[in-house]
Structures are given as structure tokens and as C-alpha cells.
Amino acid sequence: RLPEYAGSLLRGQFGAALRRTACLTGAPVCKGCPVLATCPYPEIFETPPPAEHRLQRFSQVPNPYVIEPPRLGTRAVAAGGNLVFDVVLVGRALGRLALIVHAFQRALGHGLGRARARGVLERLAVQNGEGWTEIWDSARGRIEAHEAQLAIPEFPPSQAAMLTIETPLRLQNQGHPLPIDKLSPRALLTNLMRRATLLLELHNGNLPLLSETAAKALAHHAETLEDERRLRWQDWSRYSSRQKQEMTLGGALGEWTLRGDLAPLLPLLWLGQWLHAGKNATMGMGGYSLRLD
Image (tube, rainbow, N blue to C red; front, side, top):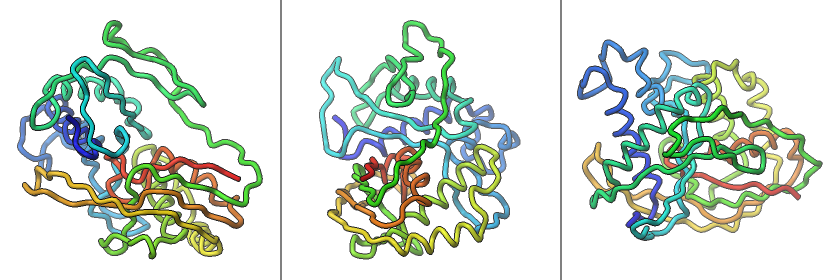
């Protein structure tokens, strides 16, 4: 039986299995480990922040993956049934695909949740344009060569962009979640811009996505947009093994429509469908689909 929001469960089990697979020393914590700089575990799951960055001094930075769980809602998976979920990988994490597949195999074999319900990773497909191509299954055991890049498309002239928010979107200001009446196009676009910039710089070796001047101009441009929100707040609970307690998280679900001169913002909005936005994006929160009119 899956919890109400399975993203937290899948992320936690994946992280534990990845550490068991990758760790060479068996040290209880990564800090101070002599092979920290070359170990794939922190590179994927606990990316250390840079000592300095032009944006600010960071205590945490985005990890190069997103786990997209089944839709929100408690559900049972019958014995022999299928559990389908997606994983987004960014930059150098793509080169760790074999390790990541093995970690998910170990996680499912170890068992999910308190009941330790076991499963088998059966197949893996990669998104290719609008379709999917199977590149691995448990019988072959070898990952087929495949294209693993997204190309930002040309966008038609658009006056409206509708975001259908499918998993709780939790934008924050100074550590506090923004309620629905405080959400704004600028808050959304600033978050997407910062997330995309850090992911591409830290995990793909890119130059800054935008100069500081261009980033400020884009943020000011987002203030010119009108928006219409048909959103509701959805809370859910997860158990934090680090803090040894239940934690209540939540975010906005529903439809959010932006109107105005969208052309400068469409690449970020389009990328956000895979990168997600807001807090806890690695466990799939802040996921949305985009439609242009």
C-alpha cells in the first residue's frame, strides 16, 4: 500500500539503496570522507554546495534528479501489479544511469514502506520527443544506446500559458511557504530561473544560464503578466528519518494561467515541466504540464 504521496517513499528508498551501492568506506556520514570528491552518491543525492556562488551563499543546492511518483492519493498495488513512475536526470547524472537503475533494483528488492513490500524493476523507457522508447528490461540486463536530451522547441505566438499543477507546488519566501493568495508570476519564474541555472551550472558545467542583468530583466518582465489562479491547497504528511518525526508538507494544486507577453519566459516554463518548481522538487513536488493558447 502506497502512502498518500509516494514521491517521498521512492526518494528515501532510492537514496538508501544508492548509498549502500556506491559507498566504499562504510562511513556513517559523508562529511569528511576521503573519497567524497569522487563518490557518485553525494554527486547524485546530496550535492555539496559550492564554497562561493555569484547568486548567494548556499547551504543546499538542487540535486540532479526528480522522481515523479504516481498521482497524489493513497493506493494499493496488488501482488503482481505494476507501479509506474518517472525519473528525470540532469547533466552528468545521465552518465550514472546504470548505477541509478541498479540502486532502484536494490531498493525494490529491499522492500518499500514499513511493510517492506518487495518488487522487481522490470523495464525502463526513455522519453523521445512525444513518445517513449524501451531501453532496458530485466531479461536483457543491458541498457541500449539512446538519445537522452531534450531540445527546447520553437514556440508559436502565445498570449496565455496554462499550468496544470499535478503535484503540490510549494514556493517559499525566507523559508516560509507562500499561500495561494501570495503566489505571483514573478515568484514562479524567479524560482524556475534559479533552479534551472543551478542545475545546469553545477551538474552540466554550463556557463550561467542568464547574466545577472538579464535575470533581473526577466524577473521584472514577469511582473507585467496577468494571472488567474484556480488553485487549492493540499497538505500531506511524511515521516522524516533524519528528524525522526512526521512532517506536514503542502502546496498548491490546480490550474494557473499566465497572460501577456510570454515569449521571453516560455523556455523556462517549458523546461519546468521536467525540472519542477518549488520545495522538494526531487521527490516530485511542483510538477505541472504546460498548454499554450
